[in-house]
Length: 143
Image (cartoon, rainbow, N blue to C red):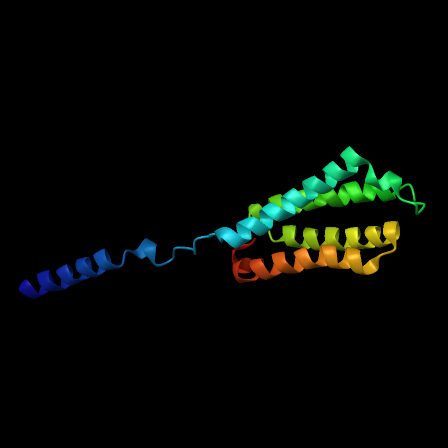
C-alpha cells in the first residue's frame, strides 16, 4: 500500500511543477520601444501628409500640370499610411503590405509632381526599409 501512495504522490508533485496549461502558452506579443516608435512614425507621417495637403495646399502650387486624379491619390495614400499604422499596432501583417503600396504610390506621385526621382524614392523608401527592419524579428507575432 505504501508503494501506491508513493507513486500517487510522485504524480501529484510532477503536475504541481509542470501544470498542463502552462506548457502550451502562446508567446507574449511585446512591441518594444523601436517597433512602437516605427508604428507611431507611420501614423504621424500619414497625418502630417494630410495636414500638409489640406492646410498648405502645396500640391496646387506646383509648376507641373497634374491630372485630376492626382490629389485624391495623394490623399488616399496618406489615409492608407494611417490605416497601415493602425493595422500594425493591432498586429495585422497586411498593414505592412499596405504601407508598401502607399510607399510606392507616393514615390510615383512625387516623381510625377516634381520630377525628382532620387528625392522621392529616398524620402519614402528609407522609412519603409527601417520600419521593415524593425518589424522583422517580430513578424511571427503578426496575423
